[in-house]
Figure 1 (cartoon, rainbow, N blue to C red):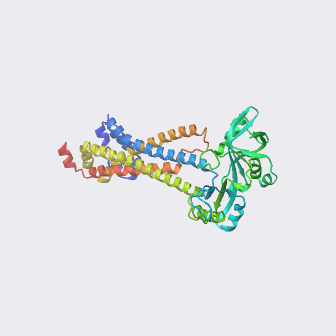
Figure 2: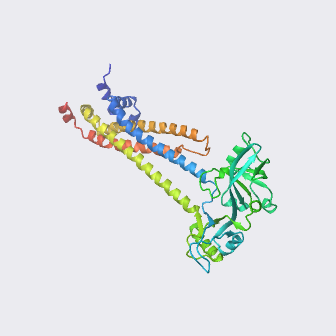
Figure 3: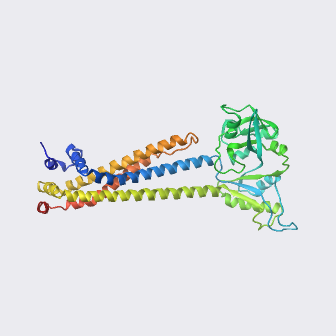
Length: 433
């Protein structure tokens, strides 16, 4: 019967080539060495496992949150802006401060002619706190009167039916596009509400479209899921808006930033409505470009933090692997000396120690990846019931990159112990024994 000692020194000469790494006896020796002290090996491997697990889990979680947030902001033009009328804070040309003013419908054409950097200028009128009902069901809603080009600023992401078109506005058709929550409240269990009628503030409207836009993100006219979109002319007449515009919606051309264009728009409106040029409260501006930039910066910071935490934990685990391999080399000094005495080269000793380090690191790291992927899959399945667009899984390229990183850490962790093993001399090893 072969002993472990005899097995460890068997066929040294045959292990000097590349093919020796596929030798069954060599792999038995590697696992035998790692399992001699199972508690120590497990605790060391757990450091690598936990580092990889946290890195993959945090990256998948960050990706999932980013996809949810992106879905909430989907449809909103990233170079858009919104203008509201406030109260003046400066007296100007005979007008006292505190004067109320309104953006007017003729300002739309005036801005198109005065500010060449604008791509879309469209007015909207709003109605908040309205009531929508059908048969014995009712719910609160917000009403938005829009022109067809509003969809270039904030696309309602029509799920069924169609959008509001120019003929609807021109002929003052009593039609509407409803949000998801309105459909759930007024048409429970029905797949397609298009073609049916609802009553909004005592007036009946035909549903021509169902919006698939989520309720999160930027909500200028109210929550998108509980909003009802109607032709501008209908809301203007039904709510007695006249020529007043509640919100002026803008998009800039591709070569320009909305933050720069909005100041030109503000200057034009102040000049037209006799507002002091330095009045900071009369014109209220909302710039989605700045909001999107802030969100991108936030996720970049989160990504950097995730990598710092994950890599820090991985390097701590790699140090643990290096320490256990140093202890292993010290315990096996006699064995290494015998190998050297019967003809083992320093490179074969180096390969043996490096192989043990890489195996320990890879097994622990791949276990961490698999476990993290399973957790992310369960989270994704739970979240997709409410948010089908959520994606928590990491990409295949990222998984391959993590495996390469683990292998590199295994090489680095085993390098110092392997170099120490190469320096063991047979005479000194036998004397130590």
